[in-house]
Length: 296
Ligand code: GUN
Image (tube, rainbow, N blue to C red):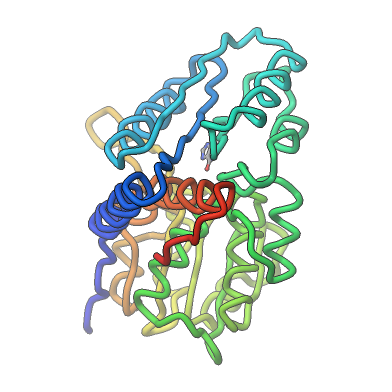
C-alpha cells in the first residue's frame, strides 16, 4: 500500500511569509506604504500569549508595523469597544485582530462586529462572511485561506467534479472553508455532530477537511483511497509516561495509508494561519491606500 505525501505546511508557510516580505519591501519602495497590523490581547491566557508573540515576531520579520495592545482581563466591554474604534480610525493600522477567546464576561460578537470590515484581517465581520458567500472580494478567515492554499497546491485551483466534506461548522473555520471550496467548484458536504453515518459521508469525499476539535476522531477507514486530508485540529492529549502531546482530529497513523496527501499535526495547517494573516494585512493595506494588490 502506498503512503500519503505529507503536506509540509511549515515550509509552505515560510515560503508565503517570504513572498509577503518581498511584497512589503516593494510597497515601501514604490509607494511609501508600510502595512500595519494591530493585535489586541485581553487577559493572560498562556496559549493566546504564545500566538500573539508569534504574530508580533512574524509581522516585524515581514517588514510590517506591529502594534500590540495588551489589556487586563477586567477591561469593560465599552473600553474594549473604544479601543477597537480608535484602531479603526488610526491610518497606520491596516489590519485589526482581537485575539479570541475573550475572557468572561466579555462578549466576542459585538467586538468582532465593531472592527471596520476593511481592516478585519480575521474575516469575522458579517460583511466579510457575506462577501465570501456572495463571491465578492473581501477579507476572509486566515486558517481556511491557508487550508485552501494547501488544497490548491495538491489539486489545482479548480476543484470541479471533486467531492469535499467539511467536518465542523464553526464561523472561524468550517463555514468559511465550505464557502471557499464551493467557490472553487467543489461539491461540498458540511457535516457536524448531528450528521448521520459520518464515516460513510467521509468515504465519498476526495477532500476531507476536519475541524471539530476531537482528537483522532476521523479513522483510517473513513478515508477514500487517494483523498486529500486537511487536519485543522489542534488537540492536547496526555502522553504515555507523562506530559502532553498535540494531535489532530484525524488519526494520522491510519489515514496516511489511504490518503494521497495529508497534513500532519503539528506542522500542517497550523503554521499557515499567521502567514495568511500577514498576507491579508498586505491586501488590506493596498486596498486602503488605493494601490494594486499583489497576487499570492
Ligand atoms: N484564536 C485562535 N485562533 C484565532 C484566530 O484565527 N483569530 C482570532 N482572532 N483568535 C484566534
